[in-house]
Image (cartoon, rainbow, N blue to C red):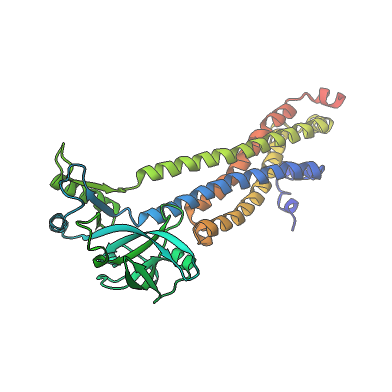
Length: 380
């Protein structure tokens, strides 16, 4: 059953559908502009949603951590063992993980080299996720290495790596974050591998969530630091509000860029509707002469514009869905995440914007045709 069969009960809608079919090439070209506009605005909106989801995923794991380091007014080089014990007393319900840091260059059997950071830690399980192997809560032997670096150096579980003249066997591959802050390789060794260094370079307090991290940071800061004396530097990502604000602003900018395409398409529809009403001026004059009211003429032409916007918007939304599936697969690794409301809402927004823009483009041609005097229309 055709669309016209559904519209027979609505004369103005049926006539509008038939009028669009009179010059199919012109109608298709105008609808194509709507399709491109919808794909632009919906795809850019979903791209912003994918970036926001990926950033939240990458940084959310550290949003609940408090990082403690030696302050500007500290008398010691690094965080002392006594300060670590004090931290454990203050935050008894959170894991306190001291770390020592250095850097090294690993050389593979094939001569490939990789510069990477070295972290000495005991409780590796509290800080790291692994793609393969185990991250023990008491790392006494073995080594953990970034998955990407292991691939570059062609290393496998059980292979040896050398640091400071000592050999350590690889017991796990570290999971690497995506494009936000995951740069550079990392080698995690037992704390004893960096025993020559006095004090700890950093101490991570694993609070669990951003609100708890913010509260703990305030407690630690008030315990160790005075107004003009910074014994320890305490930092946290907090609630990541600044990141979310930036990503929201970026999303609005992307939507504005996509909306320009729909505005251009609306001008094309305005042109099509004006040409259509000029070509059918005599026909509209006949309709007015036999008793068709202005309101019916107005509805007919506005319906033409709405139908053009609806068809173009629907095709554009389907095209945007395909683009969104590809983008989410590339950016987040989960194509089905496109169906979450945070991203799929842009499909509905693009479709609605297409229909509204099309109807607004048809207002002037419809008003002009409805208010044309029948005598003048027939004379022309």
